[in-house]
Amino acid sequence: MIEFLLKLWGLASKYRLRLCIGIVAGILSGMMPALLMGTVVFVYEAIFQSGQIVSAQSPISRFPPFLQNWFNEIRQALESDVHAHPWAIVVLVASIPLIMFLRGLFGFLNVYMLQWVANRTVADLRTRLFRHLMDLSASFYNQNSSGQLISRVINDTSMLQIILSNSTAVIVRDPVTLISIVSYLLWTQPKLTLITIVVLPACLIPIIHFNRKVRRSYKEMQGRSADLTQIMTESFTGYRIVKAYNLEDIVATDFQNTTRNAVGHYMRVVRASNITGPSIEFCGSIGVAFLLAYVIYKHQAPSNFIGLIGSVFFMYAPIKNINMLFNYLTSGRAASERVFELLDTPNTVPEPAQPRTLNAKNADITFENLSFNYGEKTVLQNINLTIKSGRLVALVGESGSGKTTLANLLLRFYDPQQGAVRIGGMDIREVSTRDLRNQIAVVSQEVILFNETIRRNIELGRLGASNEEIIAAARHAYAYDFIMEKPNGFDTRIGEKGIMLSGGQRQRIAIARAVLRDARILILDEATSALDTESERAVQAALDELMKERTTLCIAHRLSTILHADLIVVMDQGRIVETGRHEELVQRGGIYQKLYELQFQSRAA
Image (cartoon, rainbow, N blue to C red; front, side, top):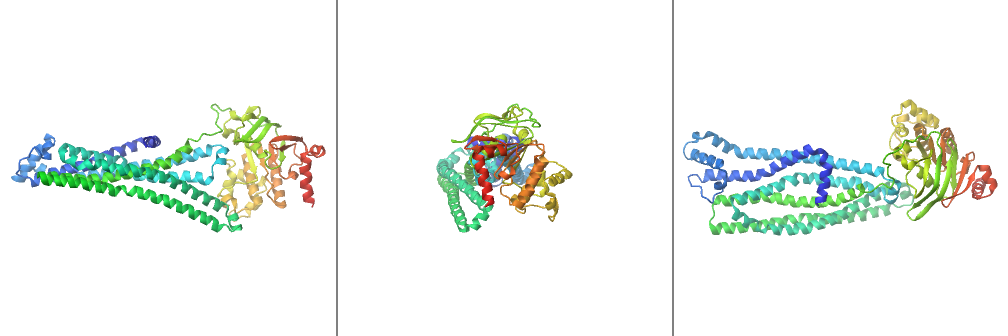
């Protein structure tokens, strides 16, 4: 728990001024009930015990000398002439509303300032977590589902925000209230106070016991919440398959079962959180009963009894709030463990300590003695390949032969276990990933477009590009004509993943984005394999325009698109088995010839 609070303090340290104001206001607000009880006793003694001698057992006898002098002045004014000590009477009358006003003011500042800090802190944590996830390597995303990650960024941090918002007013003010009241009572009436709080340790037993259950159940509840997010993410993005295979009832049933499981854990949290309140009330009533019996037996002064009963009343709310605080902090700790676990996840593709500057223009790309594994699965073995500047090199082979992995290593989505990738003789691990990727453009089979306008999706290739440059990129990609046919032209929103566009149109938007980037290196990952013949022609024309004067690595599924490649590299089971131009490879009679004949014979048939 202490470690959790220290982490929160570290996150909130940038808001020190407001945090300190909130803490000081909470301390002052927490001291007000004790001050109010002292004032009530003071007023009661002054008014209702007028004419009596202040005994050594009276709470007034324990007040500071200046308060005792004021007390005597008030008594004299009440017994003889009110006009003899007018200021003493004015202060007496105004003391209780003044204390309540100060309590309300400090309480407001305490809640407002600490809520402000709590919400800003969680917002910063959420941003920091999202930024950290964006910086992690591709291998991290291979091992974690998008639904689980969304749940941690949104649900866990939102729950942490709610918890901190509910606990910030309690975390300073109520402990101070409890300590100040108990201190006041021990100072003024030690014997009666000890009789009253003798049952206090019994209140701690249910608090400790049920807080453990809260933490376990809350952690399970957060896990079920992540499962719900995963089910929704898969169902919404894969709605076509869900409907095509009549899976609506299946996914709805999975959602219902997971929801019920989450509700079960939530109700355990509710039971464990709320059962401690009645326990504290029962223990408090036993303490009051002991006090009442003692007062009756010893014939104590009424002011003593009134002061203690009033103090017990003021103590009950802080004790209950502190109990809820422990529940909140326990729940917050469970939520934060998942968040901080992600923040502590290291990046398997680290940035160089002193990055060098990369210039990919007129630079050759070299894969040198390259080997790479996904866990225990070997994907690439001893790859040696040089791509000359300005040339088109095509990678062909069966699925799983390592073509896309080779492109991913060039983009430094992963680092190889052995060997190196060099651009212009420079190991790309010596270059910052941002600098490296700024000089590479990618057009893949799976086009990623955002629920933005066409203009914005193209502009993502180079942020800040002018409108003229965006239009020029669209023309080069043979996309301008169909864009202008849209109702709002370049300002047309295209929906999630570009759902409002056809496959060929999406590809040409992606090509326009790559044109605008104007990178020296181009990666084409089966960019036309999912298109019909007419769309393929338009997209291929755009690609031909894009590849001019660029070093291009083309992963090809349709061999007809790479017949004029400067070099064709045939891969099989993670190895390079053949290299050469199209005519050479066909005449050689190896794997490439079989692939070529298989494709063209099937087309002829």
